Length: 300
Image (cartoon, rainbow, N blue to C red; front, side, top):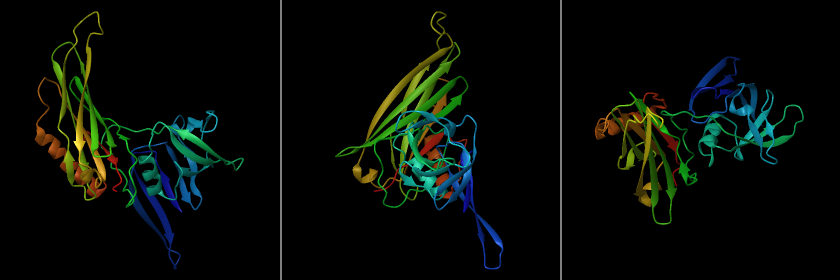
């Protein structure tokens, strides 16, 4: 039996084993989470047993798959599967959450503690901007394209940059559609946002990088039109050879902001970010100050 909590973005799954002499040995496995429903409990042979449900969290705001009725998970309930994938440990949980095709509607099968009935519910997990190390993807598991990433975000001074990407697989090529948004507050100066996507193989080496998509926006001083707030967007499309996409394990989306009309730093800054991402993946450590999101993509 293993205790588990998804109340934070980086958790340890604890497993207590009793040896032949009756000694208790506890081992911990680092589980890096990107999508949370804010619950605590333990795994057994039949699934995940809830011992705590965070008030107001996603698990208290469920929608019935069958009829659209509202519901909430309760202490004592058992989550038996996520998107029809059985969950027997924290790794199963993290992989099922990360690989959900639609994170606005993640399907949970829950056995009610009072009635014993199994009911399917939709939940919308919480996430955050910032670097999140994904769980390892089982060897040979196919990716579910298209993949929409969460937003990477950075704020420098009065400028906020966000970047997200849609990664799709077409008959003759892969395609990355990168979206960058810049928000400039204040009534003077300009702000610049840049975004980039990198694809990494099973050894966490970069096998493909997009170009840098960039957008600059001047401050809005118009007293008649929402003064002090100016926003704009830029999009970039990048073809990816299928031979590369088929070996990709993870995708990294990076955002950089500059409180001026110039490029934020240099391309070296993006490359240094990739080095930190590789280190994080290699060592299973999340680096919160890196302005990036990591998305698990199963290799073919």
